[in-house]
Length: 105
Image (spheres, one colour):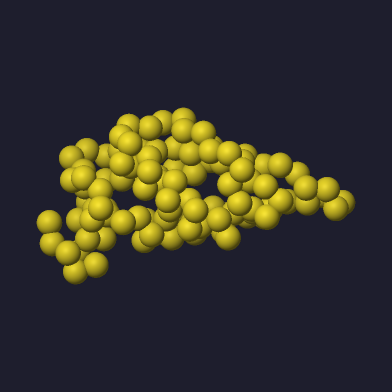
């Protein structure tokens, strides 16, 4: 079975933290993603969305991790699946990942 826990570290490392406005408090973007037969996002719905730059970044990163999304077939028939992906933007993560990239805040 698919375990999305290892996707969290991939998501955090793919976020372009320096392109985002300074994060003052924790922010969360929750995406409900329906995939097609190849695992590509077919439709995206925002459940929780606080700021447009963070929404855009979540969708951009989603497009980079589609090869990690599960595709399920049962007896040769594609089974549509809705996945819930959480993007958590925190001041601490922004500082940590910008420092890793050699950028200082």
